[in-house]
Image (cartoon, rainbow, N blue to C red; front, side):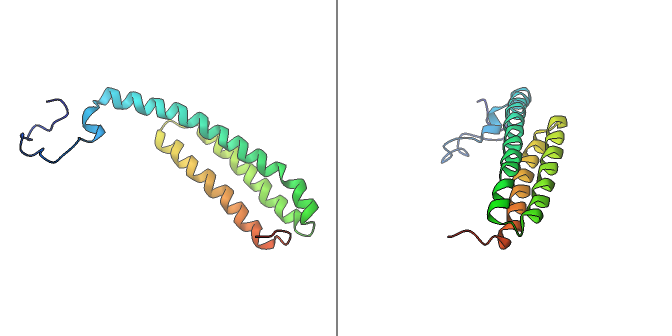
Length: 128
């Protein structure tokens, strides 16, 4: 039976509805799937990096309108994030592993969230 382990007998599989997906993939199929994930996820995350950097930059005039007292400080935070995004984009373009691509996705969220978290305590013109 394909996908069964060599030492399994018919009675040991009683109660198991299905095997794990890894048992049905040989190495070439898994490598092909990883290559597909790598290609599609890298393009998607590069797009998200560009959109996040654009949104961070687009919000600079809003800072000067709503929070003129803190706008220069917010500008520094936003510029740092844009440089971080650029560096993340370079890393993604040079990435050779799916693990690195997925780590970059986590870093994208952490970077954006950290920037917002750094600015939010100083914002005076918002309502909940």
